[in-house]
Length: 105
Image 1 (cartoon, one colour):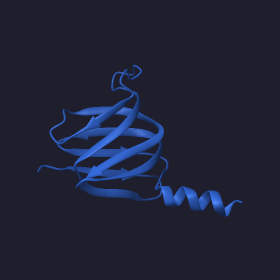
Image 2 (cartoon, helix red, strand yellow; image 1 turned 90 degrees about the horizontal axis):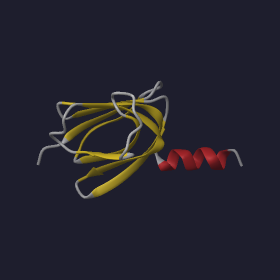
Image 3 (cartoon, helix red, strand yellow; image 1 turned 45 degrees about the vertical axis):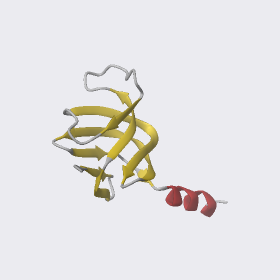
């Protein structure tokens, strides 16, 4: 089965760079600057080229029957030739946000 290559770059690191089956994300603006009507969009292999602005939300990553969620704090997404590139200031896995919350208590 074909896969997408998902790449998530933050200002500090490469947060994720692996093949996946599908990505579900929430877009704030589409490529022509209008508010997204659908809000959530799913990307599968073979998707047409696409660019959008992301809001602060969970990005769902589906692969081999498993689902992982990573928090993305805004940014932009570009889809082209089965490569999904996300540029964001910050992205965090659930265990990273939980440890940050408990360390400040």
